[in-house]
Length: 183
Figure: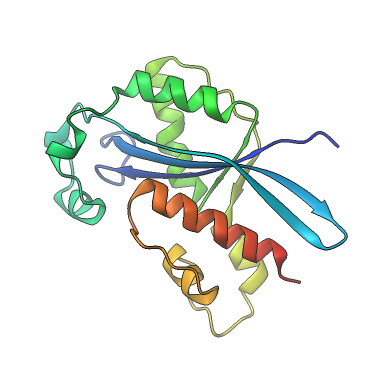
């Protein structure tokens, strides 16, 4: 079986519409997944966070900026979108994209690759932990929603800085590890 690393990705954006809004932060954990007789083994290989300078901050949804804590002073030394996507492509090469609501995150990532004309070097498979949680816990009355927050609570995972990309990527990694480790 061909082995692919997993790229646990979370993004923060200036709103919900990839045609209007922008990525301002990408958090990513790169891990190797192996299975043994004892179950899943995830090996943390790398992690990184990319702050990206917004080009159209006037198009931002004020609520989105409040949620993700955008402060212009913290983005003074941020990457341009082409710089960030080049680094992201290099670090995630050959990896399988994993996200919580993969359609949302990948919609923005895909658009960023297209507009910067940087090749997406990730494997074509994608994993969505919301779908995985629904498949695994859909019958469980104690979980009525499959948000990252609810799954963190279910698995006793502390997400110290929720709605920042790297913190959410770390929480995603831990949720995946717990979900896949349960029988």
